[in-house]
Image (cartoon, rainbow, N blue to C red):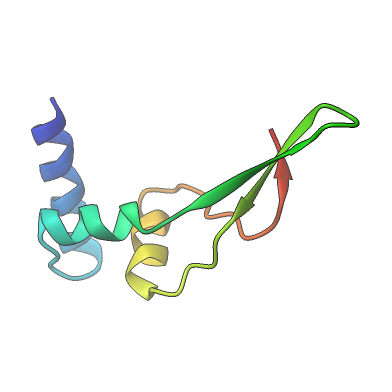
Length: 75
């Protein structure tokens, strides 16, 4: 199942953007990070996403219609 999903993502990226290997796509997606902050007083949790510097990451997220958040949000 995972192999099929990787190949499908590789195919969509190749059709709509540029040719990227499955390993390169994996490295790009792993580089997207976020920090979870916990407010002890209110018991709320927040996500602080890291800055995305690579244009390829932004394109992959856009191709898959996944929002790439850049500001803090509550979970």
